[in-house]
Length: 113
Image 1: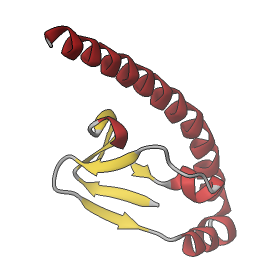
Image 2: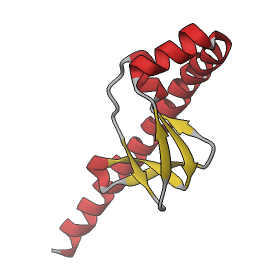
Image 3: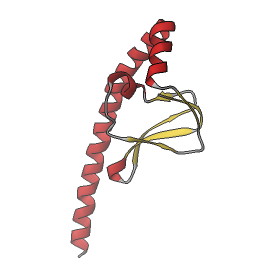
């Protein structure tokens, strides 16, 4: 899990020329969905500016937020679950857009020949 101390990061579709579909910045965190739900990401994170990130591994995250600071851990879990649904929806919309654009570009190229 990463915390953005400084800078901007985008979520991007690697298979579509790193098409950026969501931007996050200072004060935001990411990677908690993968950490909490053992999910494999379908997108990548790209630093859009120089960034300063803080990270925490799964073992320390669980120790800190599920043993020592359970209330905060519960808030992060609830937020992660909502973000998982929201990000998946945004990811699917971006993927649909990119596939449509890709088909249009292929048609344009075939017409130009």
